[in-house]
Image 1 (cartoon, rainbow, N blue to C red):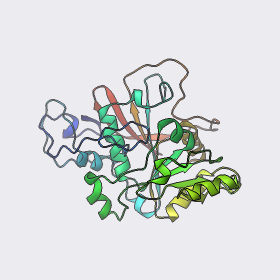
Image 2 (cartoon, one colour; image 1 turned 45 degrees about the vertical axis):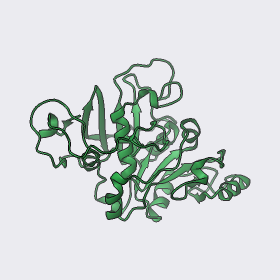
Image 3 (tube, helix red, strand yellow; image 1 turned 90 degrees about the vertical axis):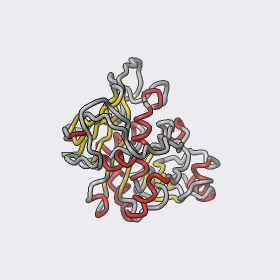
Image 4 (tube, rainbow, N blue to C red; image 1 turned 180 degrees about the vertical axis):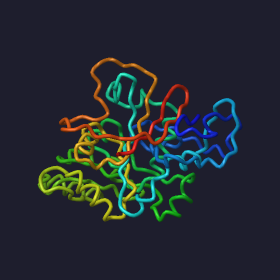
Length: 299
């Protein structure tokens, strides 16, 4: 991997990375799996925190420590809240193929995905994505244990499912076997019987809206009030569209796959158009095997 922007000595290096972590290779769905556990692209735009003295040469695989440094949440995340999104797209704008994001992913994308989760307090995801991607509970990962302990974080991020109808299978491990209780975020007018079913399964139901669904501004505030300030959303497109329209998305981590899909797949964000496009500024760009791993921050 090499850093294309900002330009540093890591734009090209050839020495082996010390401490190549236990590779986690998970489906880019939320399914928790060792090696690519969808955990995070975060970082400081101008800084190189690799800790390695590089020199020109071939690409190399970065360690999880290097990725975690590159994607670290900004300081304001510990004081207020910071919502970042992590999505993948084809060159022609598809956010998925055959209904899933995994066909557009790569091993490096999965490692970054896992890193993002390893840094987050909470992973916010829409109910449709939970259903289609087969989400499982987040797990504790030794590679991030020291960082999480130093930041006062739980062993694993909370999974927070956003749903108006609560049309979910509450017998799934996401609700019955989480390391930390799964949250169900909904509105005050959500179906009472489904709310009872969620609570009966061990999920904690959190109201973040006065009507049937959630209100994005309240959602991020309610999570922050619970100490979940480092926020990561993995979509899907409708949920991401709501965050964009409400102006609460602080950072966009987008993996651009060197692939064309054609077809009618959804974009990474959908829903009503905003009156004025929301502007973001590039914070960093990494490259590996033709994939571009970009990070943008709201202006």
